[in-house]
Length: 439
Image (tube, rainbow, N blue to C red; front, side, top):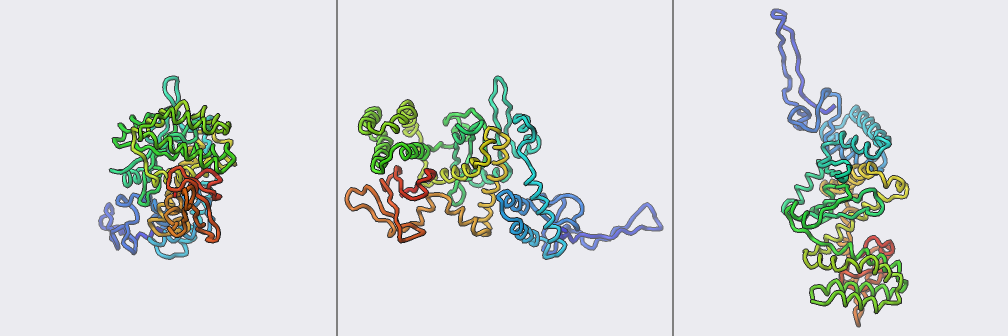
């Protein structure tokens, strides 16, 4: 029961059989708290049976679905679901029973749902688009002349884009899954009230507009983030250079090459000297020669011409990639990476639910463990928790800094190249080469 208090009595007039007298005891479709329960003024609840069906607004439904997609135990989901319903209907044994049936049924539907609506991937996507037109802002099938393009934005994502992106920064990430997915994933992100990156649209396509085109379309400045370059370089330095001293010096010198573009230094000569100085690091130099030397002028030219994203923004983008990889590159799903319908399903269910619940937990001050994890999800916010007294700089050349562990004050970590964007540490998190603390 949605708790609607509207009810009336119909009386037949025997003297005039063609007429009936309707006597209202309550005309308004509200519950005991004064909330509108259904009808044209309530977009969240439609249909008959207002006195028999529990009131479930969009917020309660999305909360329940998000918890199911994220694998939270059913008893915990039911507890939160009933709490939401009781805000409108009050405590009622019948309501609790119906809520339990609703949560169980919804859980079964979600668990049995499949991304494969058809054995043919392209046909499956067409069916998904037909079913969820409200969440698709652009769709173009593959043809001889046109590439495949699918643009996804849910109603909630649109709301967040307007809320946090209006007259603010919109970030565009365009290279996720280039080697592993059938089509790369392009993501539009805004930065929420805590400056965390929030995905507000996904575009799946092999074609990608140049930065100046993106700038013209959205009418806003395009910021360049060094994080991508640093991450690629550092990952390969760690893999291909065994000595920590060499790793530190190689990463530092690459940083100096990047910074030299504002000092008038000849980049070609700087790169040539770098390769001479580390000629004995053959594995890394081979990677650098093949992957970066042919295009390093292009990257450095981009750095000169575009404003740089802050370290806080880079940390937020980094956190988005960590979550994206955790959701998409699970070993149990590796066989599905070449299907677009699987990618769409993962984005619109698990990933969307995760971000929705993060924002809801933070704004409603509920789900404290989710809220705490969300706040600490970026390297920038974690670094802010490190006090000045926990950091000790090397007294001579300041080649490194010792940082007391925040979980165990008796242990310390070494941060090489402190005070630079090209710093790295020896903590366990760094060994995964996913995120790097910035000191």
